[in-house]
Length: 241
Ligand SMILES: Cc1cc2nc3c(=O)[nH]c(=O)nc-3n(C[C@H](O)[C@H](O)[C@H](O)COP(=O)(O)OP(=O)(O)OC[C@H]3O[C@@H](n4cnc5c(N)ncnc54)[C@H](O)[C@@H]3O)c2cc1C
Image (cartoon, rainbow, N blue to C red; front, side, top):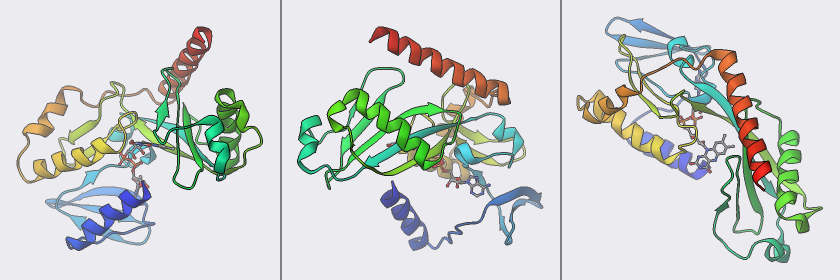
């Protein structure tokens, strides 16, 4: 993912764009025919703006923020396992299981095991994530007991109520691309291309997304409902095992 992000940044800068890191946008304000995108350090003026803040949008643009649920998910990476890897996995393939609340994992080139799973409304710290995913790993591979977890992290994804990606243009002219939770990185690239074409005047592909719209996800009540639904499916998975 980091290589992909760096590749995207390189493609942008090679094309003459400027990338501003560590610049949280605090407001997006109409300014004449364009927009002023404001940060604590300064503002960028643009004719067109695409809001693609995913599960980190917070209160930046309420009309968009109210149409997504920010949901966390977790990943950890073990220490290099060396020959111990084959006591658990004899494949280089990525694996996931068929439960609703599934685990997914794959061996890395340096014999570490990358393990992902769970979704939650809680964005946890690394130690918490490591503890939870380690327990999950041992349920599947008890022979890996005692394995050290070297890295663990949590991140936010955005989900629309209908679970479709949300691409479009608000009546005031602001473009948006979000709601990729459960869809992953690949469609974000495709959606970027769809949005870029729409900004250049070719809207046919973008307009296909208008049927889903931006229904509200219900704020805190929506988050609670999402967590309860996940727990319900987790319980159902457990009863079926
Ligand atoms: C732990 C974890 C593991 C995952 N594993 C996979 C995987 O293996 N494969 C896969 O395909 N997908 C995976 N996903 C899902 C994938 O990361 C998302 O679907 C994808 O990143 C969504 O892209 P996005 O551009 O909509 O949002 P993001 O990638 O979240 O990008 C949003 C960006 O907006 C920025 N932003 C937000 N608010 C502001 C603001 N006010 N000012 C400035 N910038 C702002 C954020 O800093 C962030 O960089 C994983 C997600 C997580 C959390």
